[in-house]
Picture 1: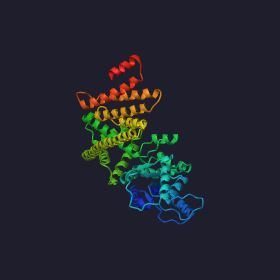
Picture 2: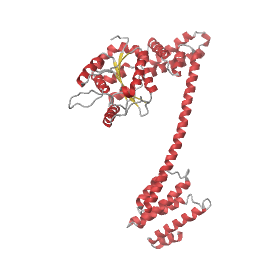
Picture 3: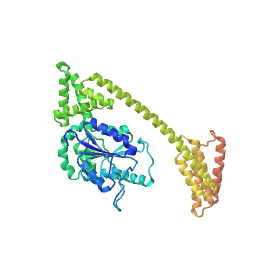
Picture 4: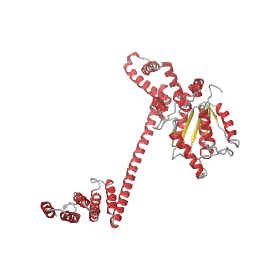
Length: 454
């Protein structure tokens, strides 16, 4: 296999991800890789594994895209062997061979190709496969749309040449079972995310890893800032832009602890990758222009990047407002349902459950923002508590009567004589009855006090 053209096996189900697989192959071609796939399979599982083992052994890495479809599977397998789709078999073989595996899991909103719905058992098996990917110790990327998935594949571009050089060194590590986590050592620039439940070793690798793409962006920004500063500070020296850029690059290289020629080489790779990718973002185009000292182009592209970011920010703000509105409507609907439930329980004589429903409704109601709704719920809570007191025994009677009194007093914070005189009159009457009930169970001075207040 040519050291300059890494071979990458692309594994994805044809029914729902056929067009995506083709797009990934096209991206790999632009990166100087040789995309490999297998579309025809023998009927027996043993023959499939033998054939795929040979193909994958010749490849330098594997891309595994997991969607919702289980996909095709061998027609023949051992009686006790589990059902596995061709894509799942590819993943298992790649891991057994210690190949670098880049796992992409399609999110809930991913736009799949049109396809027929699979049978429930196949759907269950595929969901179990996805669950294993999420729960395992291997690294993966969640792709919510095609653009995001392809962008992550594009993130390989800045280190394609480095991959070709590093493959020979990485094979010895892969043979020892490094497998998927070798990604962290060869630094291919994929923005990978791991779940929180990882082994300590994998957590360390992920936290220490900076994607190559992000690193080159950071370097260019740092050199650009140093260049701008030095252009002002060293204006009297009348140095050319190339001389100033070289000085700025040397400053950043020293600060980062990176050889200047290596830093320059990485930046050049980044620039070449951006130029080769027609879908690169405006910010990357601006950074590439900055690195080539095309400052007017950099300013224009950065302005376009700002406009796009501004549009996204405003769209996100609109979405937040809409989400807040929808949350408010849902909260009001939930409160309305809980209120009705409480009234139904109260009418049925199940006063304890009525109290519980009204309590839940109150947690969804703001005293300051929704005072009348809050006060009404306090009155209803008082009714339910008073009803519970009537069917209770012993010390519980006094406790429930006390809750009723507290609820009516709370309602009167809103049902004032000045603001809502009719509500005030009714709620005051409820409070008087509750105080009278309390007085019947009291004696002496306390009884006289409660009756007087009532």
